[in-house]
Length: 320
Ligand code: NAP
Image (cartoon, rainbow, N blue to C red; front, side, top):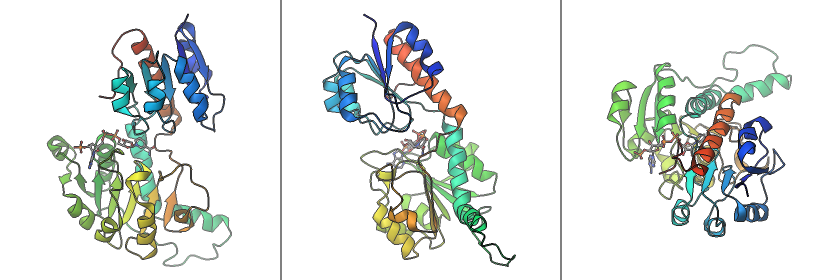
């Protein structure tokens, strides 16, 4: 019997064609809706490989009932949806999609920063709603980006790519990680700062750390209090890093000036979400790596990783 592979979202046929030549492949049949939990659990029971999305929970319950499972290829660089410890215990290799999405996610993060600072979404709405009657000196006046200070919390691959973009805008770039990156300090020209220093000095605070036990809830009332009143907060990492109630309060009280959000505590959000009611918030639906080129590269990398593990080779991008 051929090994069975389950793919949790409808992907283009040509992406999975190479797998179909050698394995039995089944796919969840919807593009816009996640696979129901029960279906995922029952498919996992007989699968040798799963190709998963960040919205699928790969936890102890799933892993301990998946006797044939050898690999879970997650279509994302983040893997906070996966219980790594349980995977290790059950001998399941986890792979992700680093690097191929770095520049695309950095483009989006910088676009979100610019859109928030220069009020692009509000301006678009204003003109389309027929409100533009005359030029006026402070019409939709935003905030400068060039020569300002950018603080990156979690400066890994994507953070560094954002820092390089910022340098092109003559920005002063601070970063905060658990460990310093002397090479990036030299090559990109960034400065290390403590978390508190970064919050106090930055005009733009950009979060690009992974969601872990340590980073969950890293931004609370206290952190927004420490930021400049003119500061703009950008989250392109994961929603639960931020306490959204605290963020809403900080925006309403004028403790910070604006926010650009690609991610939310619980996704998807509906249009009644309190942060979406604020003009100074630019919100987009978790599309950081979503360019056609990059999404195809991510899918191809998942397929390659599944092939490698099922053939007994080392996958290109295993999560350590
Ligand atoms: P990466 O290269 O692993 O970088 C992560 C950085 O975060 C590392 O430099 C790490 O440095 C730092 N970090 C980890 N824990 C930290 C902590 N407690 N405090 C401060 N810094 C910490 O990953 P990446 O490829 O740049 O991706 C980063 C994250 O972006 C992913 O995990 C994912 O959640 C998110 N992402 C979102 C989208 C989207 O669509 N919005 C797309 C791609 C990625 P130290 O280990 O030295 O602390």
